[in-house]
Image (tube, rainbow, N blue to C red; front, side, top):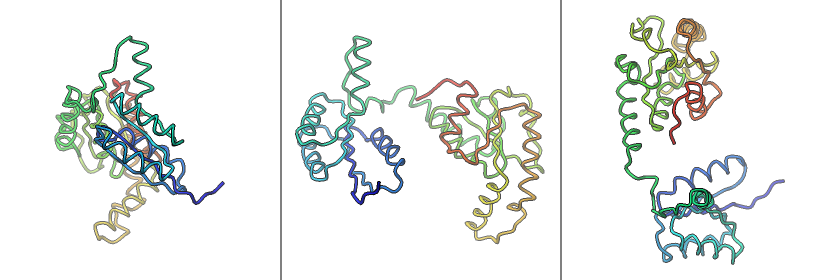
Length: 273
């Protein structure tokens, strides 16, 4: 069934609205042809700021997604939407209520509690600094302290994957694999259970390299981007992975998030929200 109706989604939060935004984008991603508009309202802390938003949502027959910690604001938004037959869903309240029921504890209703400068927050900052320090094989000594060591030829997503894992709090170092370069001795002294070999399809690596050459204003057909060179490097990488007996993941048809999830699961790393 097709429709020309525009779907308006109102995101109402007492903080930065990150949770509601991710939820909304994940939902609308299932409908790539739908015409959707996100309206984001953050740091809503009183009825004076909430009411105009709800009135506007009513005018668009909107889907309202709420992340409000304050009980009175939550109750008001629910009652308003119920009265005007607006779809309303509080992304936080059902879970907090269930946790309260099981524990017998009361939620703090503290606004933006998930963004407190906790030890976890500083661990993530440290991990990101670590990642930048030991990106692209800058200093193999970082392999010792790293939680994860990524290996891979050019265009296998080593750096973006490292950065994403760092935002989750994991210390990651990565090393580009180039047949002409000498591998650091320290690599063979590591626990192979923390080493991940990244690979890809030759056609995908070739395409990405050709695109990179065009971005740099260089002609296509360079040796770096040639299928011959790509396959030479892939063979070199796989021979090394076999020698190390490490986990190997093909990144060609996976998102960064999916690859990261596989790494965390396969290496049996502690889950970090």
